[in-house]
Length: 245
Image (cartoon, rainbow, N blue to C red; front, side, top):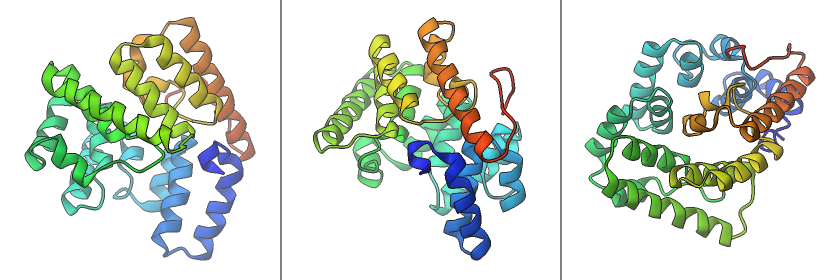
């Protein structure tokens, strides 16, 4: 249910599964992930301890702790994505590319290890691509864009269709400078159930240039409305754009 944005319904099921088997890491992760998506980052840390969730620490402006944890998880091989996401969200593009290039000599090597989960696009590659563009490395940016487009087109050709894939497509269109296509994909993403923090660009920095565009602001408000519906189902207070989660 959470994959379709029905987090308010999914949360108690995740909580019950965790309570039934509190030592089961998979159950704990599922519950924490849904709490985080609803913006309950303090609960995430209470549930897992401060050494568990870089996303929650970062959202609570505990950046140093988040960074240490993300690097530790990456070094162990347990979780590369959290570090990629953290560095991307904080605009630490040079550090992000330095990390990637220190371990993978080129994008062929990266994709051999991280081909992207089928059916949900490839947000890790999108974030790396964004970093190359920001750093002005046009050659690698162009290569990465071709890889990202090929990945998305293949997944579509195989019948993939969900809000995470749509989000990857929206990201690609923004990087390509196709704002109308990006807005169309983003609108579908939100209408299909994607939830972010109230200011969407806090989770998707690539969309910051669209802030102030009435079309974008309307999409963002629909997301906030959906977030508050799901929060209400879970017994949580509503949030607004000016509240930082």
